[in-house]
Amino acid sequence: MAAENRHNFSEELIDVFDLDWNYIKTQNRKEFSEESKKDFSETWEVKHKVKSIWALLLNRDKDFLLVQRGDTYDSPWLIDKTVWGHISSWDLADETLVRELDEEIWVDWIVATNEEEFNSLLNTVDTTKIAVLLLLEEKDIIVNVEWKQPYKRIFDASIYMWVYDWEINSFPDGSALKSVKVSSDEVLDTIKHNKAKYTNSLTPLITEYRDLILSKI
Image (cartoon, rainbow, N blue to C red; front, top):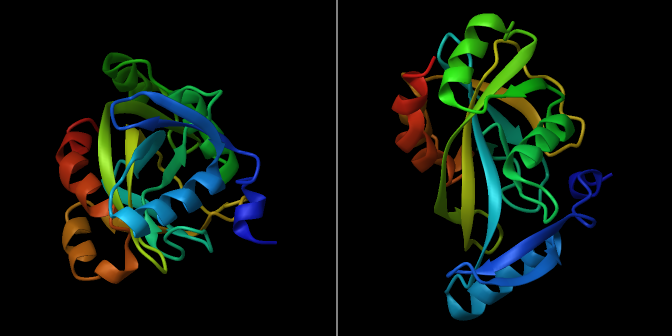
């Protein structure tokens, strides 16, 4: 079965906005991606944006735990942030995040409501069994999407960090194949010298948030 079918892309609905945050429509996620590719190929402009969640995972040894994507319709086989997904029209960012955790990697989780609670949870929760998550920021991000015909997308991204001290080896929906561990000291050089293996969105994300994330664990 194709990865996109296992992930129910044909059923997932997302809200689409123009660049000034005016609501345009609610649309099937796969149809929106296909339209975005077509629009960009014809105009070389990005006309719409959608809401999404992006999550970078570290363990207490300060290794980034990334994943290699499966045969997805965007950026197949490349190494990427641990969890990401479009925010469905009926979800909040936190709800989408935990849904993606359940669907993609089967990890138990707690989402902290603020940094004080995050620090408390790190001191009390067994992070070999439960992941602890914190929202860092919400911002617009332009992404060069790797595909047979590359195109650009704009995401309003809710960016999370999370701490988990166990292996990730279960990928039930097929959107990822395996986990990839990279030291935080080496991650940027590793990506720089192996660009073809990593998504274009990963480098700027780690560049911007690496030091902030490390300061919190």
